[in-house]
Image (cartoon, rainbow, N blue to C red; front, side):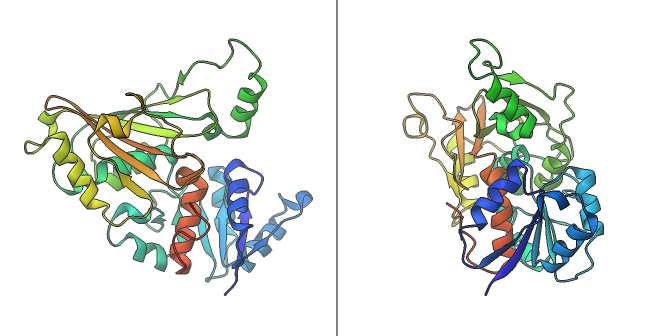
Length: 316
């Protein structure tokens, strides 16, 4: 069977990569909009309603506008913006979230694609909260280091223009220092946390790759647990998941001479989760490609689940 797919916002970073993924597939017919009609509501509406699946790779307000154009009840919308991520009428597009999440995605015509930082944070901590090891009212401190592609076209252009400079944009740059990052609501909604984390992201001088690090103290746990026991809880939760690799508690095998490579999962839909530390303090780290599992790869994975085709089709 062949499915018709439209990418509304096909010239953005996420849209371009979705097109790249799907352009190689025999089961997908990509509906393209003429460049001079990208802001033509009538043409966008026609293509959206002609499609089996429409991806929205747009700013929040534009994504809401596109949703308002849908009148075909059979069209599934997968929104990569933040506009609908905690909307109860939408399904969160993270198949590994819970045992029943795939069934929800399969049945839904409105799927909200997770944010990149949020995906890593949720995947790292959800198992510990679901197991009751971390109380839901725990305030987690976490940071994320990510490639500059997560900032969109302008940030990419700024970094690429500065590539010949010996000083400009060479150092990692902490941001969102008001501690009100836009991913916080979904971090709470889909881990079950009732207290927003202290979350501080950092953009690095590399194109893509992302690692979220959550800092844990055993005093926060509801029962004693070693790093190995924390790792086992996470590994058991994701047993059988094709895209999630829970690494052993072993510095030699999980690091490169003691260093954790943020870019190790680039060009893939894979997630590595690692636990480090000792009886006094621990780290849980989740690593992914911010443009892959953190954006376009996740969107394609959710589409595959919704359509009932092989979940890994077109992904690595």
